[in-house]
Length: 437
Image 1: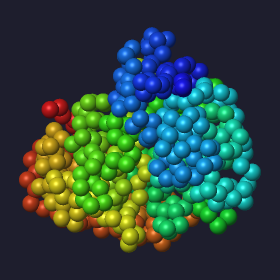
Image 2: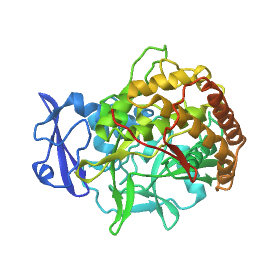
Image 3: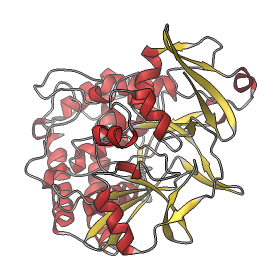
């Protein structure tokens, strides 16, 4: 069995499965291109083939983590058959690679046809994830939440067909988590107001359902239509399977990457200075109570020639507003998982562990928490004016973010701050001089 991987119309690599197992080899013509990039930073551009230990984690992280049994039944593939699933679902995935065939007509899509039809599609997603089985539809998005890749055509929502790229991710409201749409819209809007690079969002309504519409940062408009930008999440670059995306398991046992591994990956794959952007994202996640900021919810953008940068922050919700959602940190900060006990000394210890200045790190926590408090009400008003309107959960998320910000600032008391550190706030954003080890 062979399976080709493409960027646009260029063959990038070929996946082969035989008696010796699975291997992936880059196409010689791709290796010769001056602007070639690797499909994963864990698989650099070399002539030698890679084996299953490198390939399978990368592929598995392109697939959803839920509804695989339903998907398998609909397309006649075992849920454990990663290769078989990605062969059927891999034309439009996270990043720039099309699996199985070139991108095709980049402008081919099917208009949904109104609010009632969109509501029906949303209602069907638990039983037909990603509209699997529909003629011409081949897409996959990672994660546990129901979602759908869509494209906007003259302002109308459409389903991309035959390898065409989606431009947005539609995330329906989660019934077991009321107000999830407004919660995530609030958190990501607040992140932008604080000065972070964050995914752009709006909301919408389809009958009795609401949804979040997230603009994909791995897509861009070109003279020829929608272009793809490559990316991979930190689980992929670290070679971690989706089941190990959290640092800790359900019994508190360590199973996945901690902060040192995440920061080291960013320093090695991008630059030492990129640790500061990741630190901003971490602090913000702690401040708003996002307990789901696992390794798959941080990503790296990979450009022509293998240039890299940290992707915008995404998938941020406040877990403080729902009683049955954990409040523990997804990764320990100096062995501390309960934010209620997080002290300045813990942030300083983290800084030493990841090679940053302890004093400047504490000042960064102070600055971002202050900006969260400053802009929370503004974010609330912006989201309330979006098509889906406001929600009491969003108002609670706003209240909890300000409360958490105040508490984190109190808990910093006693930290030793070095005078003269260069930390500034400019137009609501936070900047700090980068440093090297």
